[in-house]
Each structure stands twice: as structure tokens, then as C-alpha cells.
Amino acid sequence: MSASDYAIVFPGQGAQEAGMGRDFYDMYEEARDAFAEADEALGFKLSKTVFEGPGEELVKTAVTQPAILVTSVAVMRAAEREFGGEFAPAYYAGHSLGEYTALVASGVLSLRDAVRLVRRRGSLMQDAVPLGEGAMAAVLGLGLDEIKSVCDEAAQGGICGPANVNSPGQIVISGSADAVRRAEVIAKSRGASKFIPLKVSAPFHCALMRPVADKLREAFGECTWNTPKAPIMANVDASPKSDPDAIKRALGDQTYMPVLWADGVEAMTAGGVRRFVEFGPGSVLAGLIKRTVKGCPAVSVNKVSDIQKAAGLLKGDLL
Image (cartoon, rainbow, N blue to C red):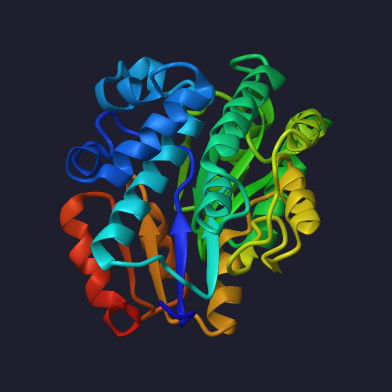
């Protein structure tokens, strides 16, 4: 495949479910090899938890993150087998955790290094804030400037701010639990159509996660970093990165800064992308992309039968 007008994207935390990727595992040696590599790297049967649960284990952040990453990689590698060659997109991107998957797909990190790194990331995030002291919520119907104002008013000396700018009218906030609760009252008084508390174990992408970034950067030193096959669209500033040092800086900052997903999608389309393929559990990103760039086709590949949808979308770029 030659580089073309498509981007490959990967989901973040929240997409997990027991049994994800099992049909790819059963049908494709490439998927089985990916799970076996992750199991060996981690020293325990992550694949068993992914396929069989229990659910309460799979939602633990230190398990969820490598589980979603390896599932997404397995799905993509199975699709490459079906297509008869590696993908060569204009950009790789991922939402939060998914940015690490993008690094594997693009050749920046090995799968072995990546699953170890995100397991460490998950543990650090879980331990950074005592359970119940942080919170996140999705706010629908308000613009970014209005939400920043809501968060500033709600903070009252605590931490509260935008965490994920997902699509026009859908922004996730993060911070101390009391501040997020105050934000609900303020946001609804200003016309928010919905305020949805999220079931998360920690307040991701806010200043409470800053200590995690420092420890994570130390862990970066244990990995081998390569130049990507195509630029990585960074969450932290919605700009493409090809230099490994720049990728590491952006990845560290992403830990405690907002995920500018919608801005990244717009930047990719401004850079010539006309089609998106999402690999991994769920279909959240495809939906966000369609709401962000009207009329832009995006498909999700999360079961074997979806591979043909991707083939249809990319038929002009297949070998």
C-alpha cells in the first residue's frame, strides 16, 4: 500500500469488554501471536482476562490499558493479513491510551515495550489519586470556552478543567470530585443538554495526573523508540510528530493535559485525509469523527466481518 488520503485511529480506555478480539484470535495467527507476545511480556495471561473476564478485573486501569492496546493491535494485524500487506496511512492517531497503540502500529514502539509501558501508566494513574477523590463527566451542548468558564467557577481552589475535547458539543471534564459535582450544577444552569458522570477509576488528563508524567518519562527510558512510518497526530497539541523525542514529550504532557481529539481530526483532514479506519474494541472514534467532520467516512473494525467494510472504504489503496 502506498501512502494515501486515509488515517488509522485507535480507541482509548472505556472501549473494553470481555471477549473483545476473540473472533480475530480464533481466525488469525497474527492475532494469536499478538496476544501471546503481550502475555509473555507481562508475565501473566492477559489474554485469558480479555476473553473470559471477570469484568471487575478487566476494568482495573492497569489491566484495561494493555488489554485494549493488544486487542487493537491484533485486530489491525489480522486486517493486514486479509488485505495482503501493511497499511500505509497519511497519519496514525489514537485517543489517550490509543496514542500508544498508534505508536506500535507505526513502528515507534514494539508491542512488548508498549504493553509494559501502558501497564505501568495504568498503575501510576490508579495510584495518583485515592479512589473517590477524583471524577470525570461528559458535558454535552456547551462550547469549549463556556466549559472552561464553568470549570474555573467550579474549582474553588481545587482542580477542574476540560480533559477530552471529543467533538463539537461533547467535552469531558476532569478534576477533584467536589469540583466536578459543582460543575454539574453550573453547567446545567448555563444550558448544558446533558451532564454524564463517567465510571472511571481516576481523574485522567488533569493537573492531578502531573506526578504521573514524571514517573512515566522515566519509564520511557526503558523502551526503544523509532521514527514512525507516518506522522503521529498528537493528542496534546493536535499537531503531527515524527521525531521520537517530540513524540515522547507530547506523550508525557498528554498524561495531565487535555486530549484535543476533535482538533486532531480537523488537522488530519486539513492535511489531506478523507477517510478514517478505527481498529479495536468499540466504535466511539468513528462516531466522533463523523460528528466533527461532516460527510467524512469513518468505519470501525471490531469484529471479523467488519474487515470487508474497511476494504470497501480503502479499496483504492489496497494491494
